[in-house]
Length: 232
Image (tube, rainbow, N blue to C red; front, top):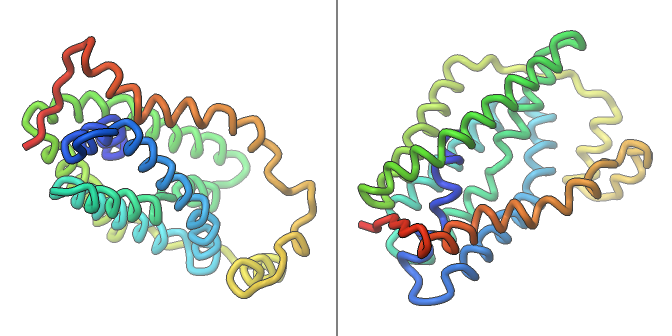
């Protein structure tokens, strides 16, 4: 999450560095594309992790994120930036899979504490990442992206060697849900309505504000606060 925190507020400046006009609109479009791809890929990656285990899918997602940051650091056109965001959206289920891994490896007594630790790591990354990214951006936009890529690659290597692989036994109902996602059929045939996510309607209104803060706010503040993220 430190790499994510580094890159999130700098993405509009990457766009500005390679776009002659409409930087805010392009940055907003990138975030919308990222979220749309995650909407499609998230359930698929979750189902794959149910079938093959959390570890290999989590490492795949971390590797994809590291690759996307590396592309951003080497980007010399908007096409490369769009490609980097596309890859990150496609493999951007790191936090969800990390929470699922914690849930699988804890019992009822320790699960809440484990999830709190996971959320704590997320919060620390979001707090420290923008500060680190802002400091590094004084030496050029490429440096924060390359540092974020290195940190994520290091996290991937650490997970490969030290993270135990755990496969949770799957029930016939799990098999039916997996088949519905990848072979065809309606998932509603296997999941009762009371198991549908009931909180999504509550969280939806907060998402546009989050996207606006991430993409447009740095550009809006650039002039009055004389911010200058210099491109190499």
